[in-house]
Image (cartoon, rainbow, N blue to C red; front, side, top):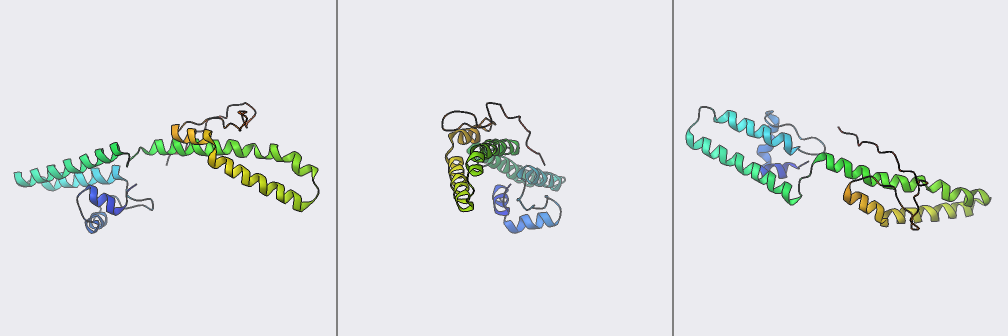
Length: 179
């Protein structure tokens, strides 16, 4: 998603002009997440092509140049990594959270014996706080999660000893929700 300023830059317009185009219904209105460039740019291009019908050849050339420039900017931004496919982002986020989920599912197994053996509430609190802190620290430095996030593929999370936290079973893949 793009901000109004980014969309204006890509279309070589001002942010004020983008607001006018939204208000007149030429391009889709900005959502809370921003402008969808894959909807806004084609809508603007359709507007330009309709506007050109019946105009001079010079105006058509200028409009064609503007369209080509806008498309080249989109391609360039995609090649530079500024734009990514929405599905790739969903898959990567799913992979990262899936790895974190596997680590969190192992948490009760590690602590059940420690907490049940102790009757002092303060000691139980200290054990839980220490384990939660360590778990979060492990999550922030876990190479398996980093690898999963980089590759955007769900994997079974490994402990420091190399053992699977989910008992050796491969976790079932769930598809990320598409909106």
